[in-house]
Image 1: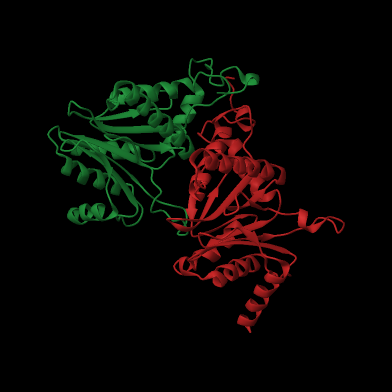
Image 2 (image 1 turned 90 degrees about the vertical axis):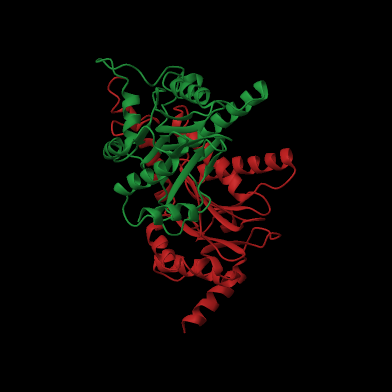
Length: 237
Length: 246
């Protein structure tokens, strides 16, 4: 990546020892739309809002939550076009893993390789860091639900519950109050929707939020349909 | 580069607030460089694109001044922005469409092409070696499964499908016009789609025009070809619009 004319890193240390481009990338993430995730004992849920600038957009098939393997998926906060690059690379790497090992790439491995890509873009010549933080949700063969956050620096953390993007501080406080270690997936989905509602402008319905779920019962990552989301919202009311 | 604040205006790196100035400037160049406004609309089985044709000099051959391009025989594009960047983007789009058909044996769906062009645009926002292109592409075509589609690709690498959208100098006014009709647009017939697009352009420019002063191009139905309307055909629609207003 990058041209030979730019064979020097654009991300360099400041006098105080900071990597400013990474900090600025984190600011880009903090300006992005809120996304959150909760890991329950029997599954993981990730959710975000789905708002477009105009009623003219045909948004039914447009999605921020993306499946990477059968049993894992991503959501993001930050710069959309950068996210697409990471999704594409992750899917390709998962496919290459399957070709070699004939097993689905485990979530932890997926996180490591994606984080490694993001780190490369903080050090390679002529490129800037990715302006996204990712939430990675999945269940491996061992049946343990996992939720990870990956930052523009390439650092990654495992979470029980977390939020990224605008308003993430309030969202995380809200989650901290409500999270229980023995939480089940159904409760987690309700809590996720309640947390989203905190920062939501206007009325939430099945068409203006996205929810991705992976459950221990079948180990498959799927997006909830608008009707399913509406059912959960109606139950919450 | 510890004092990043100046370079962030010159190449695609983050500003302290997390903005990408080069990308924002590319947007500005795309909307104001040509001074044109473009509109794309999709009805029940038809897609239409409309824009002004501003011939800079009487000696210029009018047919050589165009922002409307075929990418394949069935997919068209209205490219607003700096015309040289438009030509570059269109050349690449034509290559990508042809390469897809060669590799996979069927014509590229409009949305797949739009995503590919958007991913290509994204590279220029992350790599310092090339600036983003000052082009907003509105790719139109009739998908076999999804029907008529309008997809807008911008310098940042965003792309979205629209029922109707606009770009260029009067983008906001044109979008407001279309938003008022958002419920009825997807059901429009061929004539309604074409005439609404033309009326929209007329209303935001605040003036009437002749058939030679605008470009209109359509594609109708899955088997349809993307082609520009002749001056006579445009005049026909303009007359019909005038009659409806009387």
